[in-house]
Length: 78
Image 1 (cartoon, rainbow, N blue to C red):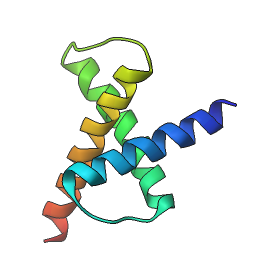
Image 2: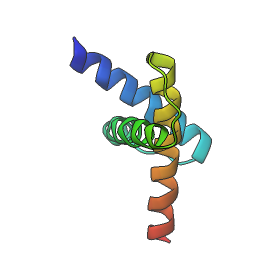
Image 3: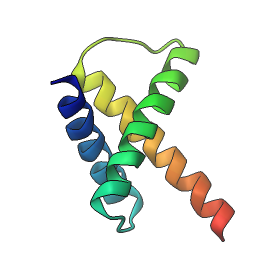
Image 4: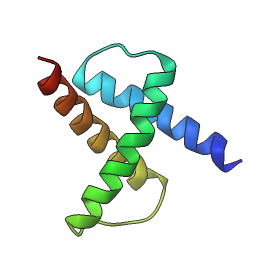
C-alpha cells in the first residue's frame, strides 16, 4: 500500500510542478520528478528548519523541490 501512495503522491507533485514551471513530461517522468522532488524538498526544508509532518507538508515540500529540480535541469539544458 505504501508504494501506491508513493506513486500517487509522486504523480501529483510532478504534475503540479510542471503546471507551475511549464513543460510536458510523460506520466513516468512526472512520477520520477515528483518522487525526487519530495526527497529533495524534504531534505531542503529540514536543512532550513522548516518541518512538519503530514501529507500536505510533504506535497508542498515536494512541489518546491520538483520546481527547483526542473529549474536546474533547464539551466543545464539551455
